[in-house]
Image (tube, rainbow, N blue to C red; front, top):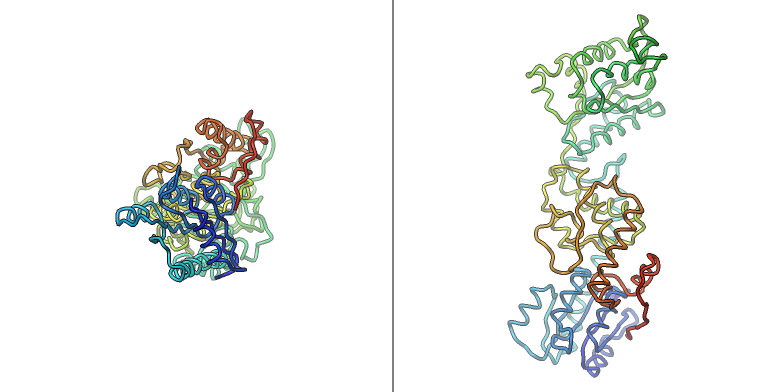
Length: 469
């Protein structure tokens, strides 16, 4: 058997537990046993095993419910159901609920060893895959952009070729696809990387203030001009100015921008004296500028001036091969930000992520993963932790209410703490004060629940009940 493997065996027959434990004993394997299914589940939640063997027919909580709870806790755990009541119907039902295998008693030890060896091998491959994924993530990061898809590699290669030479550049792509990251990469790899990188979102500027923002003004140029003001072009001298969503720039300002690009000089509003500037300009837009030209909303001469070098950023739908790496990066980011231990996503949550078409691109993915990390109470993100609009179907695993998705930038640490407190109080109320049941509903260990009860000052009696293994 491979090292680091934990197995939990649940069976109401202590003789079978002793026989299986002895047969599977190895220096490389930790084995926990329980004759009580509820205590066995507590061990699963506490020890997070790779493999669970459970009897099908037991007093109280039966094997099928054990399968459901273990799979809900972590669908990566392999569950083998054993029973002396062999029936095709029960086998099919066990597999349907998430069991990896089904064996009739008496279980031949040689067969059990062979099947466990196969499952252990798969568990070890998954573990190695996670380690390799972390290494791949580190190797697949280019100037803040993450991925190894052909579409992103082509964009990265173009950035490397263009960065040393550009004076103007146009970046196109859907909203949320990462156009500013591309602009910053161009700046960081350019000869003026030590100069300023100045950003102006053209869609957020009042039309009457555009010229003042870009070129500055002198005192008295207009009513509220109480003193001279430097414009962004002067501020970005010897650096780069990034004009985001340039398709929203007014036509009058476009004409003055074109003159600035041609002459490398600006004239403050209200001044007659031009000022020399040495600025590289990167513009970005999600709009079709050629159509805007046809609609008389964008100057054709400015378009040609900007688009001598054009870099198109692929949408997330065009680079879905990068989803696992992006998801891993965002889980690590928000788990650290929220102070949580989150290992990743369950397989069914990964399927939901992969099937989504991502109209909001990276920005939408970041919002989804951040929200899921906030909602997750256990060590993995499951379907019920994802925003409502992403869920293919409602999960019946947990009766816990799921909050309405919110924008991440509206959530602070206090809101996160309050949400966690409400979840724990709701679970305790649902479980009628039974802390073991509340921990199962929350999919966390009892020790973790006790800590959180004390942390939030919840008025619930704390009892000690330790499962034996």
